[in-house]
Image 1 (tube, rainbow, N blue to C red):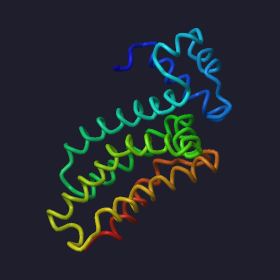
Image 2: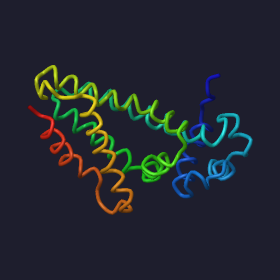
Image 3: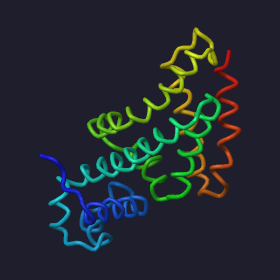
Image 4: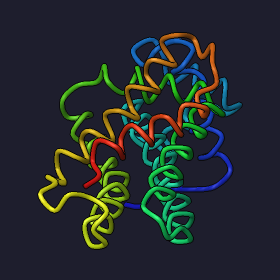
Amino acid sequence: MAKKRGPKYEQIIDAAVKVIAENGYHHSQVSKIAKEAGVADGTIYLYFKNKEDILISLFEEKMGTFVEKSKDHLEQETSIERKMLLLIEMHLRQLEDDYDLAIVTQLELRQSNIALRNRINEVLKGYLGLIDSILEEGLEVGYFNENLDRRIARQIIFGAIDEVVTNWVMKDHRYNLVALAEPLNATLLNGLKK
């Protein structure tokens, strides 16, 4: 059965981000999410099976939107340097612009059970595919060393971006996150170039 969509769905997703960021996943009752969304508790269950479904759905929604937007922007760039920088900038900007979402993605999604983590990993495949496409193109045009292990390179790139954001969240977002995009890009590309 496909999920119901619409304004209330979006309200619930946005409310869940806020409530989970403020209270932590385990202390975020469905009733708190419903109150923040301005809907009755029962309305939540018209859109989601349970709290876990809300968490996965918000990640799917936010990540899916990010991946689609990123694909569109990346297709307009021609150089590997610009593509990588653009991906990093977009990643950092999305989370800098929504600190609650940053808390949820960097802290709360990691405290989940194995079944939930497996579902999150499925959602991440679209994002990792963006990194793979940059690596593949870089290999094709000779930008990267032909012996580059794409799987390890993808893990390094994602891990570095992820760690930069996590550190920013842990430091209570006291500095400009997007300003780190260029030095991060340069560091990554210098390590992967021919």
